Length: 128
Length: 416
Image 1: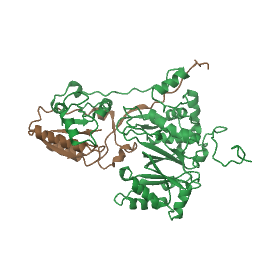
Image 2: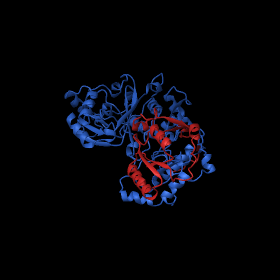
Image 3: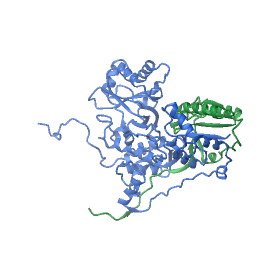
Image 4: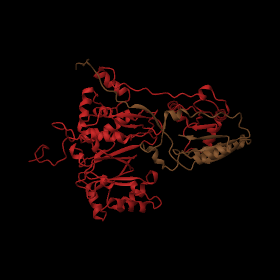
């Protein structure tokens, strides 16, 4: 069959960027609301750019580190083993284990407030 | 406060890319995968071992994440801003453009109709809305940047799917939902879409025999268009934004069908959700699987539900052949909402959410069967605002596949 070498113009099918991102759910949301594109909370690119890493500690000795189980499969057991590792290898570092009461998709301001008030650092996991 | 996030190595690339698009730099630590459903000894080995991505000792990495001073790049993170695309692609031959669409991941792997300006302009006659009108935004992820699309963009997708202008109002309603047909989840989500109201007959949708089979033009192209829209406007990039581990073939067409309102003994689904019978709507469902084919009374449904135990405490949508629906009505279930309540109470009194159990009616009355799915109803969108004031724009001779009628004219070849 003869090839048609004539050139044609077509439209680009891709959507355009908005600068609008999804974000964690409000605390009173049900877990499956994470898939609700209408009512899911959103962040703007501008708001996200204002989020920066906090200054680091000079050492962990004598500090309190919160270990947070975010809720994915195996995270509870991993964090428990992590705490056990700290107890055995670095008893001078105090660890506090917390399990998120809400789902992995949901914000939990009361937990973050507790950690900020009583802790020096946090280890969160395990995602995926 | 200094924070050290831990994510399994399987998602290292995913979260690092995610951080770049958000302009958030984090000090990740990646233990091997998987973490779930492995022994304590395995987890202990992960903790004592190395991060397979960085090859550094895992705990050393966590310590550094919390104590090493921030670099300049970490103090002043930059987001990678995505470019906007020109309206038109560079001119090329048809062969090259087909290759471009396929190799760019803009299709579902099946041949498409190239969206030339002429074809898209013709498609736009299927609505009165202006081409540059904003329709919605979408992402297959829960957290990545949403992409927005106009009426013209949806018309472009409709052309690619092989649709005609008569189908555009339903496809625009799908776009207005903002809901992707294949949201990203390692569990491989599937979607289902059901059309109610007068537009079903206007555009020749199938709600009778084989309503969910590839034997109807409108059902096929509308269902496909939702996924092509999701791929292009929901930003599907396998491995980067799309993480379905096994995937599902339901994503090709999204179980697109119409409800058999005429033969159903119940009020149409959309009427039960508060819409008028004269309104045309598309209802969207999400789940994973088509689970069983069932026969028998409501108590048999209950047995099936108990034997399955769906996710999220049990979401079920039954697709009932009209004969099955009539059978349930003859048992005394005049209102499927009452049946939902009864089933939920019998199934799990602690989890009383009757709206998690839904009933749809479709089929050709060849068998009094019901199909069990684990789908939840998420949203119903009205189609009417997208229909031209003059009515659905039909071709002079609309394309229709053969209807499932009994052979009376000898075309089946078996009439004496």
